[in-house]
Amino acid sequence: MKIRFGFVSNSSSMSFIVAFPIEINTIEDIKNLIFQNISDNYTITDEGDNKVHVNDIVAELLSQIRTQTPNDEERAIERLNGFIILPKDVGANWSKYNTEIYKNRTLALPQAQEVYNNLRKEGENVYTFIFDNSDNVYQAIAKHLLFMEFDHLHIVNH
Figure 1 (cartoon, helix red, strand yellow):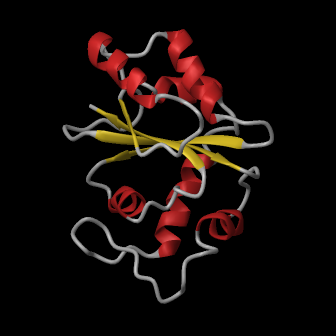
Figure 2 (cartoon, rainbow, N blue to C red; figure 1 turned 180 degrees about the horizontal axis):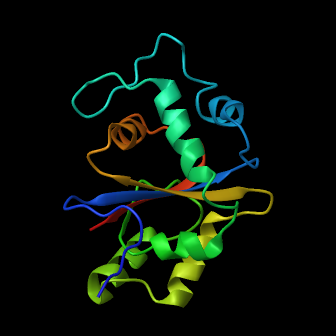
């Protein structure tokens, strides 16, 4: 049985576990990290091609960051209960974890710990984010691969 705290709906949720090179404290930290290489003329849209403003994305990310501390290992490991997609290569065979999730419906704690350790490197600050898959901020992040510059995991939770 899966127990979920926080936002619950009939639709799926998606999680990201992201390793940033600095601790995030301000809106400017997020903008400088995520949007520094994106032209001001670039339009960010959700899956329905509706424009999503950068400030909405930044505000949501900062809101979720403020509910946690950097490198909250327990929170990150709790999110590792779904299929891992779009990971940046951090030296792990992600398919073996997805096979284990499929077989056992979840990762055993040592496996989840190994996934977390493969993601987190010295000097980086790991944060977790969770979205309803219909959320336009989530759709914009996923569609435009806004976390691709960072070691991260994108996880489908059902």
